[in-house]
Image (cartoon, one colour):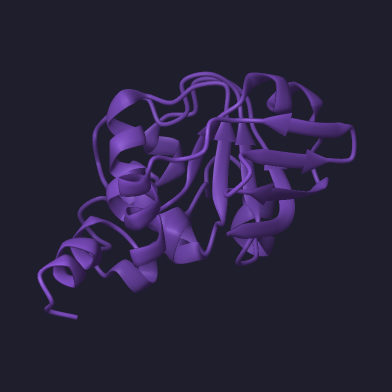
Length: 164
């Protein structure tokens, strides 16, 4: 599997209240509506211009804060192809896998990638191809690939049980 997209780059410690603004936590409950509020308080340009297949690149501790799943769901619904960061908050990392949103820890790639770059992620080869070079990451284990390919944990389990 490969994706190519435009980069939206952010720094360290971007918390879940910024990814999906806390003011919408109890007022927006439909998944289909969540994407329009993604990163609203951090980057109004993202809210207006992010397109399906775009890729978020970030520093350390992306997704720190509360364990709200909306902070992953809003990006998935928005069509974000993947997130590459120097590191993820543990609960955010697991929520992303449960949602089928590919996330990659690749500090060297983060340092090389610039905002608005177009990059390609080759998940089969474990490579991030950027204008400044190619960076490796460990390919996902088979189970994780299944979660991503099936669109998340619930669709994956339904498929495994023959319910899809």
